Each structure stands twice: as structure tokens, then as C-alpha cells.
Image (tube, rainbow, N blue to C red; front, top):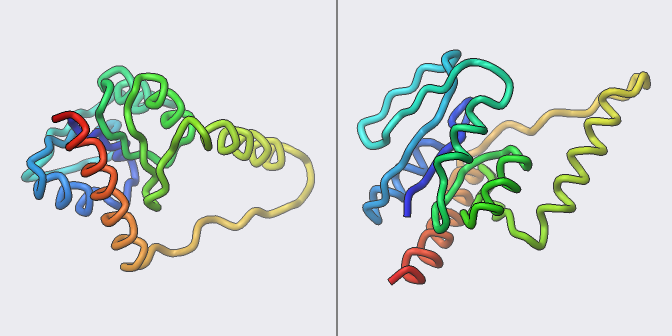
Length: 151
């Protein structure tokens, strides 16, 4: 098992590394050339700048049983297709049962943004320590679920 993180703007890198270190799981952070990351624990891979370049590197590297941290539903869908276990930075697990609905929501939201209506969609609320705690707890449950299933 390895944890891959779509690290461009990811707010849960430290939480991910803390859980991974507790269970001695390697972590790979993937970002593009527009981001500078440093880590004493994780391997860092820098992908080319460009739309979806990080996504393709991540999906090509992840394998069955790996964990993928991403807020991108498309990346999550591709990770599921490879047998990985994707998790959102909120702690929500992506599954074969919920991914189609999430992809549909993304499609509808994109259509609304492209429309000529002057509808303004609010962005995400500011992240709190409670959000970080919930993510860490959910990631640890995911790790334990699949770490011991391998053995």
C-alpha cells in the first residue's frame, strides 16, 4: 500500500503524512511546476505544468490497494478503475456506489458555470481544525480497513 496525493493546493498533506507515518506507509506527493513542496517524509514528484498533468501522473502510478487523496472526482473515478481507494480532503470516501452521482454533480455545476446566467456559486467555506481532524480520522479508518485486508 502507498498513498498518492494530488498535492496541488491540497490542505491535508501534513495530516496525510502523520497517518501514513504512524502505519509506516510510503507517501508520494504529486504537484506541477507551479507549486513548490517540501517534505521530510514523502517522495515528491513534479509533473509538467498544464491541465490534468498531475492527474495523469497520479493515475498512471497508483495500483490496486493504494490510497489516493484528491478532491477531483475524475481522478477518483480513474483511481477506482485501477482498484485504488480514493478519499476526498473532506474525508469522504469515493466508492463505486457514489462516484457516478458525484460525476453528474460535477457535470451539472460545470454547465451552470458555462451558462450565460449571472448566477454566482459560492466557493468552499474556510477549512477548520475540525475539518482536518475529521479527514485524519477518516483516512486512518480507510488505512486500517485495507492495510489489514492485505495481510
